[in-house]
Image (spheres, rainbow, N blue to C red):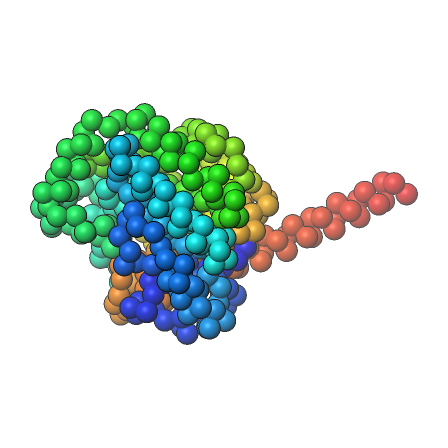
Length: 361
């Protein structure tokens, strides 16, 4: 696997110089953050981003993300215009040598948490989600804003969009996603770009909005809707794992050969549909991180992986979930699992070869 790190550009307090000092760090996951959803990404802007990363001896492994305009998700008559712009952005990314695009289809709001600084027993703090708190929140009153959210909408426009979604159920949203995929995946094939859809975070409906990238059944339907090796999944352990009924190993198996990107993150379940993010360690979270990474290796996954979200430790301040220190520890922990699993695989292969040789003689 190619260890990678999320970087938010020149304004990110975590620098490329710091990132490249993390052992075995090869790639950068980034995007152009000031282009509104639905507009074409200029080729020159893409090349500028890539050049800045190349100059530090790193590689732009994944664009995360090219946002999908709400008109596409809602299935409005204007969606074909925004799909055309998306197609052109893919062409420009392909021309710049970008191989993977991570994107999501979450209506209105990206990943959602109810507390950005929930304390942990060790004195650090991290992102947390409490279902009862989420149910009491009104995302329109401005009290809750998160780093992943598009805040460009005016309050009246956002209210209109939220109202329109009341007529969109999960089946209609799924159909709108498939319509989008049928249009963009052929372009992705033409320009050799992997499209990797990210699961909804958390993987259930929030604020009265439908969500469909949530479980194995839906992933199988999404991947089966357009049969192309370029149409795949971003496997995010923390997103899928927030729902205790999701079997993460089964999801990996269902998407075998179609996983193009991995977000590795551990969480601790704190109640029904409630969780807090922890270190990546299997000893602190509820997810079987060793088995998850091992399953990915056994399925032949060799693509980019990044330590996803981290605690704020050692007094660090910065973008919630995206500090340097704990994500660097996470990368090192993940590398340890990968190296050990592969070493054990080689030992087992040698043992099997020796047994086979003795039996033939």
